[in-house]
Length: 332
Image (cartoon, rainbow, N blue to C red; front, side, top):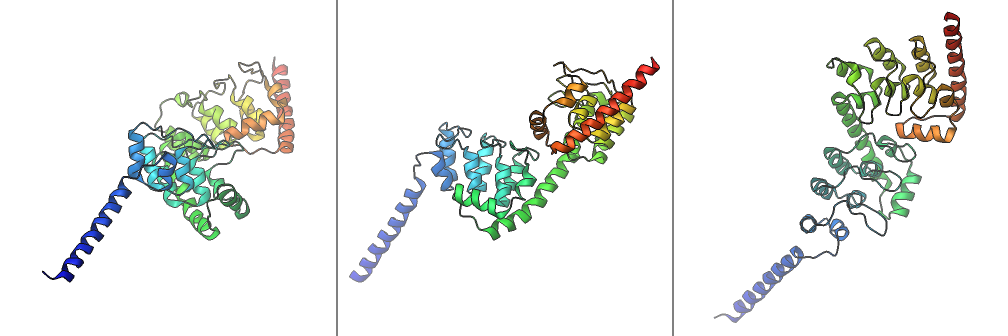
């Protein structure tokens, strides 16, 4: 036998056996925790950990971070899909209320944004200071660099982030539009009266349109200051004295947030000026509620208020209410 050929065969065998062993070693990597498996983008390992009972919604002790947020920060779109499919809360947030969708949009991570939207991410969620996902794509580079690179050490590049955001924004807007066509509350949130009308055309009684928190659509529209929508709802039979879960009427919430034109329309349609909610707050109390509390409630609703403008609007609303009271007293 040719010894050279034998040596070559042996070396080749050893080489391929070595590759095979390396391949097997890679497949059998045991990660100490979910976080390492996510960083390695190892879907097989993540599945194994999930099958072993690792909770996809268990936060990391060191920084309170969720696995889904970890995958989002590091642009692991496939991991994001896997975690959502296995029960991860797609709307889980960090300590300031930023969701994974907001974070992915902030980073311009197109694939991750699409994965989160497909997984049912809330397109209208707001963080503790009232910012939503559209605001996330408008953050300037100085702040982006600070959070992404100095705080999270992600090493992102400005050109990549901005190019990604240019693609993300239309994706978000299209997703919102589609959601508005399917859900009357989304249409209301976007101030799309045309779509609100379309939804109401399929409803026998407008009184049945109530949020899960117990707010009739007229009260919700009044709280948002959507005067034209309020006019239309009154035209189609909405009860002007309907109340939300706290007993607040449309006039009371319009007064609270300083929606002068909305309050005027409600008063012109004989809204009760003696209204009191279940907490004992009347119109005067709503008009005097301090700025911090008012702005806090407004933030939850996605309203952007200015303190001085609110004061002026409330003063004008007070005059409208007093004029209405005088008219009622003279009629009596």
